[in-house]
Amino acid sequence: MRLKLWAPCAEKVEVAVQGTRLPMDRVQDGKWESVSPLYLHGADYCIVLDREFPIPDPRSAWQPKGVNGPSRILDHGRFRWTDDGWQAPPLSSAVVYELHVGTFSPEGTFEGAARFLDHLKDLGVTHVELMPVNGFSGTRGWGYDGVNLFAPHQAYGGPEGLKTLVDACHGKGLAVILDVVYNHLGPEGNYLERFGPYLTDRHPSPWGKSVNFDGPQSDEVRRFFCDNALMWLRHYHFDGLRVDAVHAIVDTSAVHILEQLSSEVKALGSELGRHLVLIAESALNDPRVVRPREIGGYGVDAQWSDDFHHALHVALTGERNGYYVDFQGLCDVAKALTRAFVYDGRYSEFRGRSHGRPVEGLSGHRFLAFLQNHDQVGNRAQGERLGHMVSTGLLKTAAALMIFSPFVPMLFQGEEWGAATPFQYFTDHQDTDLGKAVSEGRKREFAGFGWDAAQIPDPQTESTFKRSVLRWGEKVSEPHKGILHWYRDCIRLRKSIPSLLDGRMDRVRVSYDEKRRWLAMERGSVTVACNFSRDPQWVPLQCARTLRIILRSEEDGEKVDGRFGGVSLPSESVAVLESAPQWENAPLV
Image (cartoon, rainbow, N blue to C red; front, side):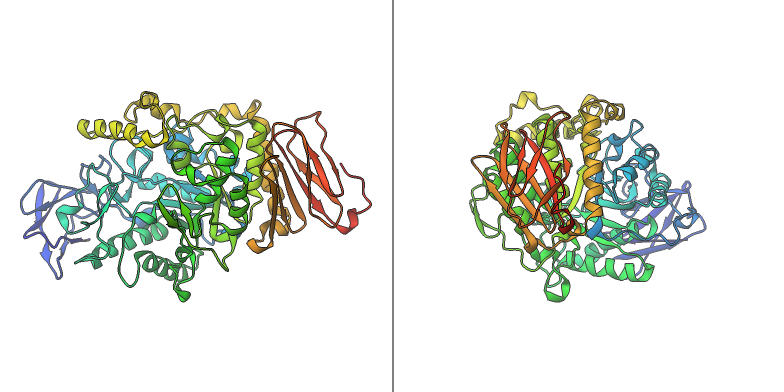
């Protein structure tokens, strides 16, 4: 077997394997190679640069002893896949479910997650999105401080476990998306700079040095990250990637790294005969991210819609601290539903400048809408979920708006039953000083939100992690059982009515009353009427035909009165109505 390495800074490179050191030959442009019969599947090895201490291979596919341990050779051809002929559903018809492997199941492993796939299938999920699973320090963490980008986290089950989970998902008809982090590397176990100029201080970032995508010798850096993306899609059969915080990627090249990545992913999809997608997390409010490459865009298939979340969160909770200061209430919810970006060139108080540009000519399917995700829950002081802050009625109302929006709906683990468990920020850095610095930095980070530093859980303590593990038994008791039924019913309805699968934002009609706190969204034959007020009230509807109530959130015993011209709703509730010619003389429920 042949080992390859890029180490332009080294004068001498060796491979430490099975008690011996084998020299690597310099090839060209800082590249090194070595061929030996010792490089067999399962063999542990390390790289030795200029006779210094052994360190892991930056492209290691297997790190069984953690980020500082030896690398292990992996033969991807040994795994027996059972998903021949698998094809992911199109993103335009997707319902995405974000989960964290370590807290999704009691076991906190890939195998443990596989036990609950039937629940996701029954819920109506089509795409499972895994938070980062590449190697990071310790055993528990969110995964965004990863350093072994090519090696699945061993505590979750390593390469074999990950492939088994993806194969099981495909067997259940579920596509799988992997969250990858290309904007920074974690601090512990990060040896990349020993090998070459992977990082640069030319573009400061929240994590220190940024990734060198556009400076001297950046061609190989770009190759490293693109190869990583292609590896997950080819060898682990992922159906797509979610690229973390692309706004933190600085690339002044004529071809942005996102454009290169999207081009190479599309080419791999053609080679494999599979539909592969890229989803970005972007705070840029720049539609260029999701515009096709042919018209000057980056060619990413979709991006998360933070504006939808922020606007709806403010309308539901009244919070206006931190970045929520930029959002006003139902008026911005209406704008998000019809234009995607609330900040489309509007002045942002949080940023102290105008932000964003309009979305024009793009489908709503280019955006993922959510009420909760790992950031919006986990980056609160106590990791509170939306259900901890609002009533069950408002939670159901918000869920209906999200699921029936023109966007691709995305759920966060446990949201579908209003999980009582929080999702807090947790780490397991083995470096004591680093762990302390992370804990202190967490307290400083929340100063802008006005949260009491003393109330912020220590990320390094195991109890913070354990509090975040889902308790699956609670979903069979109220109010969780009722919330779960509501999510199932909404998802089922979305899939059954063509107008709810239409991504045309110019066909969405929204009316609202900020003072009385009601909002109505019309999408083709369907109208979603929402009462955010604590008082029952009449919600006027703009429809030329009779409307029939087909789904409603009120508790048993409460009456929803619908008739031509509007609907009478109980407090903090939602009703879904449909118009059809054959119902014009039918009695209303």
